[in-house]
Image (tube, rainbow, N blue to C red; front, side):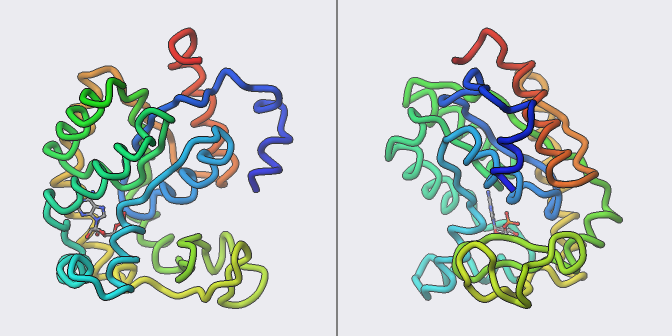
Amino acid sequence: MTEELLEEKHLKGDTSLVSRVRLVFLGPPGAGKGTQVKTLSKILNVPSMSTGDVLRSEVASGSELGRLAKNYMDRGELVPDDVVIKIVEKWLREGNAKRGFILDGFPRNLRQARELDEILKREGVELTAAVYLDVPEDEIVRRLSGRLSCKRCGAVYHIQFNPPKEDLKCDACGGELYQREDDREEVVRQRFRVYVESTRPVLDYYRDARKLLVINGLGTIAEVNKRIIEELREMTRGRVG
Ligand code: AMP
């Protein structure tokens, strides 16, 4: 996937897009954030982090944090801000803020967005852009009901649109694929409601800061990827390098 994209003309020789890009990805569950973030992270050569993935691995390991988080996650509710902010702050301070980064699934509400700005300020850097993947609710439900996730590396597939080469086996790492507890339809609808209530104000926050990039999230993975790259290139022209 990444190789194909790199082969494409629009990315060839593009070093202007940039080792120091700092991005957050916003959008409803199932908008394709995880897939796009993982691909872009390779193309732009910056580390990425998904708060959902970190929390799921805490749940899997049975840690105290994981036990706390599981209660919220299974119901499709947000884990308390303090918990998630600590995870993100630690990761950013380990050098990733300076190196450039992409965050998937954070911030989810205004408090998290503001805290992120504070953390970055303390690190002496600034967010480049907030990328919002715009996908309507009907499409979300259709996508998530067929989604499969890798237990080991977090890669995502879709039974119909992006099937693994072998049944229930991850192409990337050979790990077992499963349906996330929170990808069941009633939980998906709950997560969508949570998203509308909590995350929409975050869009206004970034729009006011002139950092919001609204990207049409419909179409193939490569099409959406190309749109993001083009918009980012436009936005960062002469600003990062
Ligand atoms: P995701 O994989 O991003 O869809 O996240 C799955 C679940 O993890 C969410 O439904 C929340 O319960 C929890 N979660 C992930 N990121 C955050 C966040 N930034 N704030 C609060 N809860 C989160």
